Length: 183
Image 1 (cartoon, one colour):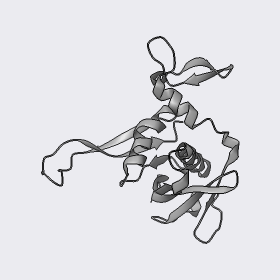
Image 2 (tube, rainbow, N blue to C red):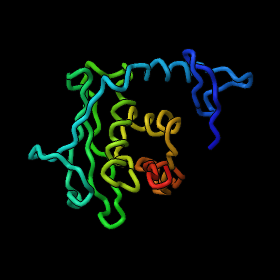
Image 3 (cartoon, rainbow, N blue to C red):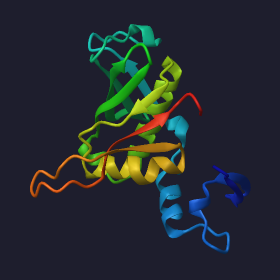
């Protein structure tokens, strides 16, 4: 994926080609995304721990299908949380589960930082592939389908399951994944 360099806030930065229009300027969607993530990343901190409040530093500490939490803080205040479940210990695959923001922090750009911390935590402990939850609500589906592909290579996983209401078979996105080995 080729990224383009443009001048943002007085310095050259790489941006995804979808962020630019035909004249090389930022699109409105890209401007909205940049305003959402303009908070300083150093204002955010996260803790990754077990239910017994023990820190997790390595993939070998995971048990299969155990739920481990990542808590996100903005300037010391709890903003949201997410979790990991181990799909395959041998292949080092995780999937996110229970990712949520506290009600008063929604629609303010904190969600993208929560997912950045989830992904960086997965990379830090040695995860090779990170899947989304299968039960994505409209906010998480939009995050995985529209926002995260601007920063990571997100691959959709399709299914041909029949529709629950009419029974017709059509191809739809079941979940997404990010291959962390190639990053």
